[in-house]
Length: 499
Image (cartoon, rainbow, N blue to C red; front, side, top):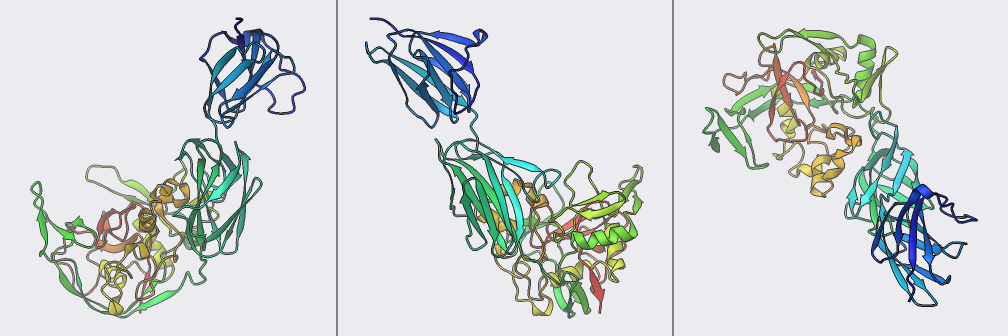
């Protein structure tokens, strides 16, 4: 019985509509395939020509999995054309229909992808740049897309490369009330319906159902970013007593364990009564748009600060611009501007000097630590919540809500730079103050406990090197957290005004 001898030649050419068999370059010969189980490696979209050198001239070819690779006879009766469709492995069966001789070609296709390549708003290094969401293995998202919209705004993306029938699927993270997502051909349309966040998944239905997860944030635009809230004064207990103390054997410090978040704190002793006067506080943290107006009028002034004894003074600007990227405020042609789409995000990267100067520029001042804590927990209207305005931290924090919904991986997305979101999107506290968990630079010099702290709500000393930072630091939210903040570090701003 004759054997079929297969000569495999790898070439790349058109995917459809070829009128003639591809030319066989002699330097592309891979092997003489006269035995079974010969392995062929190719890339998605690539075609290989297999030549049958010994047979009866009438053949049939079939692919075990056409989602991975297809095979057909060429115009020349001894040519087989194999096309790589998607990443994976399959076998091509070659049969001589006269003498029933059979040969098998093992095919491995490398690198298949579903690619979203569009100018997506507010995404990626440099922002507003072209990005791709790439899937290379089953259920593994390599790059995640993300963008933000405003209510009633519609945005379209285009699928520029696909390897099968694509569709949008629902997941437990999808909130259909936030955005309406439709797929028409290769056009993905997203319409914002109401504030909130949602994710949706585009799948390529070829083998393995490759996925691309897109994060959408819908912002509820406020009209009162300069609004002030009256905080009526009163007396409250600041700090913690030592009823629940953990002593670190490697330290002389005592630690307090907070049962609401199961975290340890060491700089909140002792509990003491503080009386604060009436004052007004900004309804929201200071935004990038507000701070840019200040920078363009006053400039990014630099102050020399000695960080530690023996070190040369360091030059500290009002706002720290990293020229390696990642800024929400940039400088162009001597003017400062906000990256489009981030105008209403809370300003960050502000030094103590920048925060103090801004507060004075708008006729106010930085809050004292006592004022900040009193206002944070509702002042006279306090209902004793564990967190500012809520017992459940997910009610006031996108970050914790995403973690709870198993969507924390989306925080790798540059859209959520520094894990931050636009102001005023979450539940306010009892006074109507929003985002009191955001970082806020206070007027007080930092002390590592409350021994000797003032009881009249005033600032505790003029900062020389470190001040107090309250609210969230990084992505950790601590109920009673106090942070030691070097004056040249980067924080956010909350302004108060004397009533």
